[in-house]
Image (cartoon, rainbow, N blue to C red; front, side, top):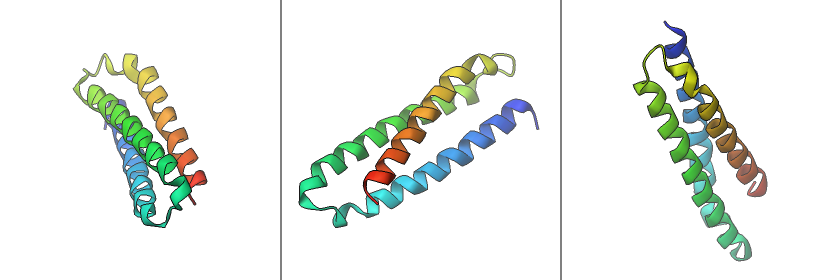
Length: 95
């Protein structure tokens, strides 16, 4: 397995984990108090945006040549960090 394939696999596994966490947060929607419901929905929209950005970066990586993929790593890692922070923030806020 090439370094690019290993990196893709690692990213996909992390994205799958975050998708599970986002699904858990969605399932809590019915338990959110009325006064925090608006904030909850804003957080979920923010998570969806960040997840979409991360998925787009992963797709860019998949489409990149073996020689060019390393040039994408910085942008990918920024998207991953952003999604990670958004998930952590939402999880801590709505536990």
